[in-house]
Image (cartoon, rainbow, N blue to C red; front, side, top):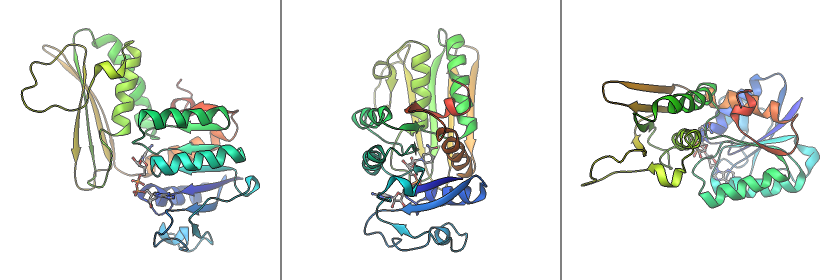
Length: 267
Ligand code: NAD
């Protein structure tokens, strides 16, 4: 039985993760945290997830000892994820991280912890998006020569970072497959008299509104034809199921950095 702790248990993803862990016979929720000072501290994680009481109280900090939990799933904020990584690295506890919006420096810091613990970090834990990353790389190799590559994404009104981690991951996967650097090829926003589109760039467009769970498209626009690879998430369950699958897979892996492609055997 894999004993899982969830960080950010009161969040949109945290609540869905609690439900998913409970549904999985191989997993047991043993700890839940949320932000110190939040009104949910002391609440039951099961009640927050709409499941009824589970006897797991939401606390402001993680368990202090390594023998109290086997793995942490963290979908919170960059600052909190980095602080949890320091704690888990000290205890030798593996982590599944879904937090997005990390700066380049924070991403480097995160990656450094993979020298100490097994760490899975993916901007999107859905199986469909993971497959789209592969498809986009394959399509780019065939189409990039004659096409302009644009990535569009749409999310709910509460999302705080843009473009989404998934849109950036799609862009990075494409840039990598073309041997380009993302710094040089990404056009993250456009406004005013931009001039004509430069060849070889990867453009991004962002929509925020309502309760959109997450839509992503990669568009390869050539003269006379267009290929679009689109993924639409209709429920957070797709991310939570993927994260719990990653947790079960990661618990058998040695120290190192992994992503969802490794979990699904696509890398
Ligand atoms: P949310 O705001 O609903 O939830 C975040 C939770 O973290 C909140 O309950 C907040 O109080 C808590 N939190 C903040 N600081 C904390 C701290 N110091 N200690 C403990 N808890 C703390 O956000 P969300 O929609 O659940 O998304 C969370 C993150 O996951 C975002 O970065 C989002 O982009 C990302 N996300 C990733 C995927 C993926 O598949 N990788 C999917 C969906 C969302």
